[in-house]
Length: 501
Ligand code: ZN
Image (cartoon, rainbow, N blue to C red; front, top):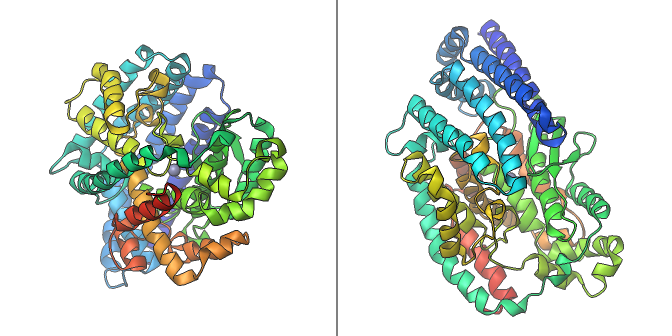
């Protein structure tokens, strides 16, 4: 068995090297590449994706996995080797369904689509992007057919980001949450004057914002010896190894929240990847297990920590030192309330905690209709504006603030959006457990102690890499699968107090 296992690890290592090289090209494309580099970069990414896919789906890989899974049958489920075979086999069985030529075509279309999207968004023009979107939807329909599905075409796409999750389950959870959110948003709206966030919408020097975003990352324990932060139009976190996990961010000169909470959010993703153990490197067990679990980490540091009263009791003096003039009429309590302000708005990434999931639900609905041909690309902008008005009561002024705001569809990420909300639900479920086991988290945060929470997450989540699925992790840690109860209770408690409901 040992020889076969070594061979398997060598093969997986090479696949991982190629994939990480592609990730570096993709990071560069979004952070530094001049627009003229787009066509060449698209073909470079296409080639690397094809090579990684060919290597991973090679017959030898299939043979090794088949034999090793027989030989490891008696090992315990948690065993590293048993888990490596199980997780790789799941990835492999999925990957072999996609022809390499298709994978390259998809990678190339996603490279060109992203550039077209960035341009269309900058110019506030829908037309330059709609053909790319049509092409991408056709590709994703083909992908769903290759992958196979029982109930809904969307199931096949969702499964790539959240293994085993079904469209029906997401719809049920979303319905349950929507029923609670809509009256909550309405009640808050009638007491909107309880919170004033004007201080966050003043001029904030971009260089100082950038420095404070670094400070926020240091505060939660992000290690700049193993990471860095660069500017991009749409923030993300990317991993080249568990010793090089980079965050990206953007700064708005007249809005404080964007860079600061962007840093905490991407930093939360990064802590997860940095906490993946060395022994999993260059294998399929490295990194985060699924997008929802990943998002539970980013949303936890961004909101449950970063938008807590206790966090601002600790951090306000730093804010005040950096922005003396803007902070003059503020204190920790006002800051806590201001960063928690609920205000239906156009932009998902800047949405408050209460309305955030409504943005996601709208995209979930749109994606389902697009892949099932129930909504045409040409009808999408008008549908979007109408849906925004019915979900959130606001109508975007233009496509840049509406249907073109997110990069996902240009990249071919369909089935991705729901994981933002599933992760948010999971973050609250986890946080309840952390509170139960770690004592008074608020007292710790107010003293600037974030290590106990980080260590708890390392112990319960990070150290397992991709070994367990969302449902397995949730059950191991909290005794039950993903639920929405904790999230709803958290929102009701926090916002009833802030808004006197
Ligand atoms: Zn995220």
